Amino acid sequence: MRPESIALGDLRVRRLGFGAMRVCGPQVWGWPKDRANALAVLRRAYDLGHNFFDTSDAYGPQVNETQIAAALHPYPKDLVIATKGGLLRPSAPRWDRCGRPQHLRRALEGSLKRLRLERIDLYQLHAPDPKVPLAESIGALAELQRAGKIRHIGVSNVSAAQLAAARRVAPIVSVQNQYNLGDRSSEGVLRACEKAKIAFLPWYPLGAGAALRAAKLKQVAARLRATPAQVALAWLLARSPVMLPIPGTHSLAHLEENAAAAELRLTAEDIAMLD
Ligand SMILES: NC(=O)c1ccc[n+]([C@@H]2O[C@H](COP(=O)([O-])OP(=O)(O)OC[C@H]3O[C@@H](n4cnc5c(N)ncnc54)[C@H](OP(=O)(O)O)[C@@H]3O)[C@@H](O)[C@H]2O)c1
Image (cartoon, rainbow, N blue to C red; front, top):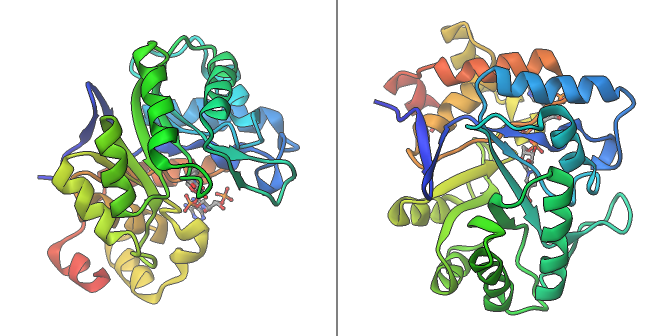
């Protein structure tokens, strides 16, 4: 039996989450032209059963968190919002790492304000900063957790060794790394999450759309009368019980299509073909 939900510390969420980044403007910068559509996608995502949303202060930047609050505040009781800090966006193409404790403390205050929360359920270090010891960045998040501003800490874009180092500083409930049918470079980190019984959030679960062109995927989709995106997501859900995919879209039609993947079951034969 495939588990329908997953634990994030003391929280439980349904296993198909929603990545909110795509409702920003082009290049994840500013608002999109159709602002009403962005808010409608966020509301519909919750109505379709996604009760785990992933965002970051870097998306927009700041815009994505504001959009989530505009669409869904006051939040339904079961909605878990995960955000991240540790990246700077001085211009649209730049995603500069900044893991200094002082920056993370300031970033968290900004996220709390924009999301209209007193505590963030899951706060993730967006990426380790090579100029700052990881223990210092995670240590700053642990302090904020002790101060009651963070419920659970997660990490993103880490190696298995960095995950182990982070776990020596504070309890870590999740890892968010790139992973999909066509890119399994984080397989070792996924296995480390299984061993530690913590959630693995694959970003680019659809390979940003590109993974959907694979011939095998199309073949399995045709056999199941499903779409390639649905099969790609069902494959992730079947791949590991700790997998919590966060597909993103700015399209209501794609949102409906992707949400239905939670119900799709692949046979052993389908999985063998995709593996
Ligand atoms: N931690 C990190 O460093 C990091 C990096 C990147 C992303 N993320 C997180 O991961 C989430 C997911 O990543 P992502 O949005 O970049 O990648 P993704 O979910 O793999 O792909 C989204 C792209 O695929 C398209 N798409 C979605 N559903 C589709 C469907 N059913 N059929 C065809 N195309 C479809 C979307 O276009 P349309 O909008 O036209 O549907 C969009 O361009 C983000 O929202 C964000 O929360 C984290």
